[in-house]
Length: 224
Image (cartoon, rainbow, N blue to C red; front, side, top):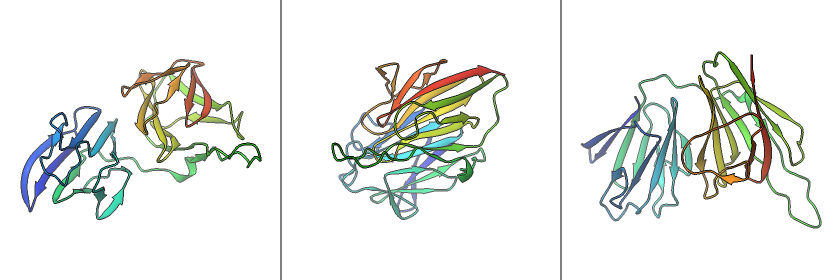
């Protein structure tokens, strides 16, 4: 199971097992990992774990979040990554070999043409992560709005990322008992059948209408 090692000045302070979907980091007491230091924001960062993938997101902290020396807003963690929060260091370890992103599976929904009436609205891009395929179902999404309306994306990978980084990002995960959508990034949550979701994973059903970053799409799930 993935875990974090928190340290400062080479001294290990604690080990945290990522046994829940969301692990928060910050100065306030309600955080899963509380760091009582003024360099750390009250709600500094969050790590979302889905299957074997972990996503780090900076929560608009004052001093920023760094991974391997580079500032990040959102980052897919890899085994051995070093997260830097002020003087504190958080090492990420994953016991399971992580799947790699396959650029050939990336799908760009594009942007609508400029209009003299209203500005163009960027549409989401999608990328997939390879993984074992469920035995009895195969899902897909069809784009209903925007310049690529009618385009279909097969959900044949274990994890498909949808959205516009920095604005709204969600993932659809493929599990043995169905497909689930989970919010990852942004203040606005995905909408399914007109209802805004919360932070928990939501199971998708055939013909569900999903809205992410202003783009509507329909989910299909067919038995093989």
